[in-house]
Length: 144
Image (cartoon, rainbow, N blue to C red; front, side, top):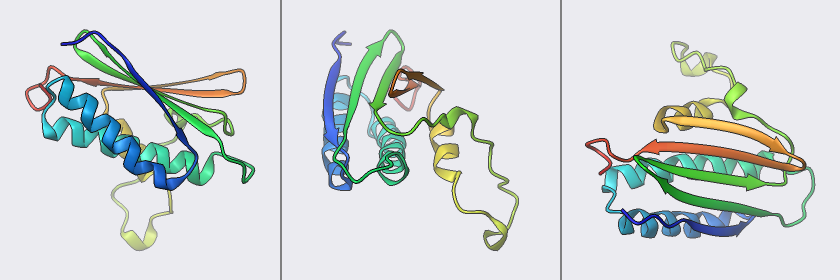
């Protein structure tokens, strides 16, 4: 497995989802990851990016979101950095999945999905920057 990292920046526009997906697919293929593994990582990144764009900024200005993907032994580390409002998705309570659709409150399922697709989710606020780190085991049968 190559020991390189791949970094890129996206504008805070929903149209950048295509670029995000393309960059992850390209890098995932270079590592020999399965289509299923790449799909799961892309799904988590898509949800996260959409949440940042939808809820993360208090103004209408264009912001930059930095993505860094780094293979680390048996894990793929994905670091997402933005200068949006402080928000720690790790602290979000698990949704009540036993409720009916009519009784469910809006929100929270995307974060639940991210936590279940990834093996580790960590958050830290560094000055004015949100730094979310996602880790995925890429030696699992369905990833390698």
